[in-house]
Length: 232
Figure 1 (cartoon, rainbow, N blue to C red):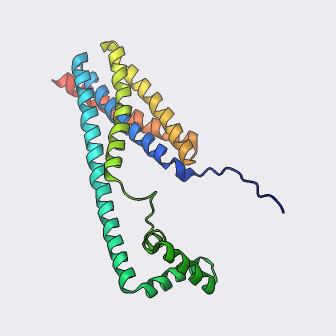
Figure 2 (cartoon, rainbow, N blue to C red):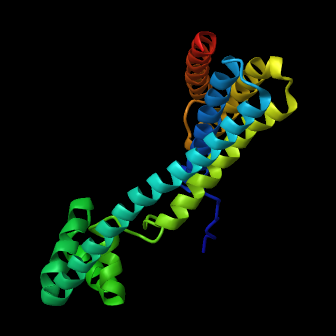
Figure 3 (cartoon, rainbow, N blue to C red):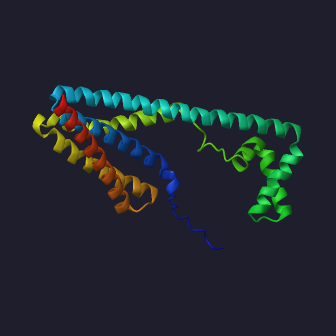
């Protein structure tokens, strides 16, 4: 009998968490670096730049966490409502639900007799989980977790925001704008490449895109800081 050879399979969906973390760090770098460059361009003191950067880090992290928590909580509420409705339907009309599941397998290419057998066996094991996965698209890996999402967003944003802040600490006041800008663009390019690699996208295109928009954002805030600093 021929031996079945196992081979490792790597799927990009497994890297979605990494890609989301990279995007969160990108947000932290870009928003904080832009704020720092704008304040520094207004001829502020180094302490003022640091205070603005730290305030931007805290505000941004809290904003990310709050927004993510509210968004994912809404998704979680919807999932719970759908599951409650599905549980009720399984209790009141199980045969209809079984036929509905079988028809979904027929549409995927199974013969009707086989589809009904598969539906019967899966529902005998765990009817609600089966219908949640097949009908609603809800599984353990996709279930909304508001607290986890909020903490992850806040953490990744904070890590990204800490990088331009570190550049402020080690830079002389006269060179904060060019050093923070250059370093932040380098960080953005690196994370853009990592995110593209994790998502299976074109690395060069993704890196160029995030670098361009990062440079534009910092140029705009530097210009605004320069104008207001001169006027004031």
